Length: 43
Length: 227
Image: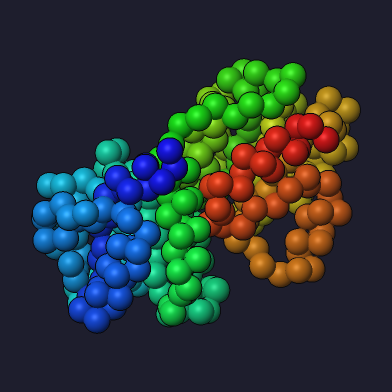
């Protein structure tokens, strides 16, 4: 149940460095969360 | 996205469940974004995780007092991110706490903190656990006045407050005949061991760091009431 909720968590990532953004997105993907990026919801 | 204004525009258009943010942007800082969001009712308790290479505790104090969910220090381990995300899930989930012999919905809670944002964050976590009967105070002095003519079942208090701090409030409660048995949970950003030793000496049952891991509070509350 917890994993299901976590996989549907929509995350807005605010980071000014592109490199850091990529690192964070990679780590978030490893945790299977969703995120909003550029206005689109991507899972 | 890389800035405050862009983030605000996106948040308004596509409200997320959680914000993970760097400390500094090209057009501002995370605290500006956080404080702007907290002015709007719909975003007032939006979970916020800060990612920062800033290690100085005093520089992060403003975030600790603003009801953020977690601070991840760069470079952070995957386990730290996982813990913060689990905390976000717990923050967003509602499930009544089960404490043997207690009806959590009727427990009377006094929540004392001079930061309105911190009170809001703690209140949200408690309400998620079914503790809905919460009376808030912005200083220990107001709580003491209230306790002179009211009963409570749980006291959740900050440490640093302008007039009557958490230790003085705890000492009052422990010395009073009517409330001496009340479980006391302190939520504080205080890091000095000597101060925290005094807190425990005064009779606090448990201490949670600000920001605290919302998954921990369940077990702490159960333990406090079962003891």
